[in-house]
Every structure is written in structure tokens, then in C-alpha cells.
Amino acid sequence: MDFNINLPIYLQIADYVCDKILLQQWLPDEKIPSIRELAIELEVTHNTVLRTFEHLQNKNIIYTKRGTGYFVEKNALTLLNSSRKEQFLKEELPSLFYKMNIIGFEIDELLAEFKKFKNKNKLDHEN
Image (cartoon, rainbow, N blue to C red; front, top):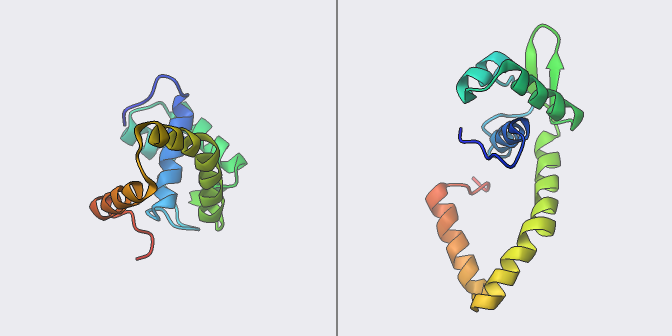
């Protein structure tokens, strides 16, 4: 995983975990990789992943079963969809619309490009 120097690594790992949940690669009540496994996979320290998991527990995205490991919360997908949509609408969409406006890029052109993107990347959640 390539890390951005402008954002703490534990938050970038949290985004990675959340992406896995949003893409339904990690399902509700399903065990996720251990702290050690994820640290090895992402080439980070054990403490960094521990901090990530504590952060996600505080956000009610994952939970722990003593002696068993970490699991995806039942409502994690709903929480993540809601928070990511809100973040997108507030932080990213205004910038996108501004750029579209100054270059004369119309919404129907954007929709066509988005459909191509979804087909290419198979991110269609309506399967």
C-alpha cells in the first residue's frame, strides 16, 4: 500500500478497511484479518494497525470478541455509506462542479464517463 504523507497512516489504513467493507469483501459479523496479519500485509507496525482498529471500534465499524479477533459490525455498511456520501457531497462534489463549470463539462458527459468507469472497475453494487 502506498501511503500519502499528508494523512496519518492509521487513518489511511482505516480507509482501506472501510473500502473492504463498502465493497462487501468483508461482511457483517465476519472476522477480519488480525492486527498482526494486516501489519504484515500493509508493511506497517503492529501499533499502527492497533491504533486503526481502536479508531474503527470507536466509530462502531468493527468490534472485538475477546480471544477470537475483530469482526465487522452489523450496521457498518450502512454507517459507512452514509458518512462517505455526506463527506463526498460536502468536500469533493463542490470542487468537481466548480471544475466542470469552468471547462464547460456537462453533467450528461460526466454520467457517461461514470458509467464507463463502473463497467471497467466492476463497482456496481446492484449485483
